[in-house]
Length: 65
Image 1 (cartoon, rainbow, N blue to C red):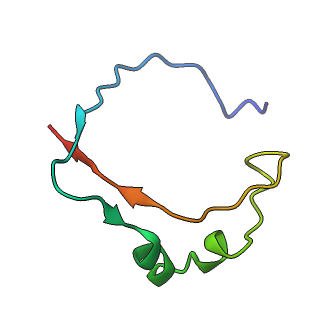
Image 2 (image 1 turned 30 degrees about the vertical axis):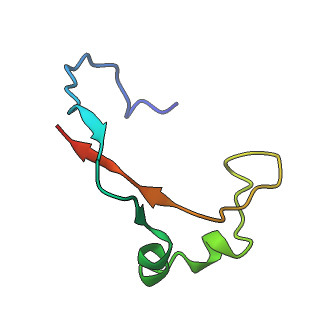
């Protein structure tokens, strides 16, 4: 690593999440509109895993408490 990086301690606070009682949101059409079409049609996911992978569905159900 270059000398531009240094270690520093930090306090990190994350919000609490829970699963919503409402039905899940289908993210596929939303992600399509954001330009992520290749994710669902054989996009290159080789940087995530050496195994062949594909995404068929994506749903959202988490809400902040």
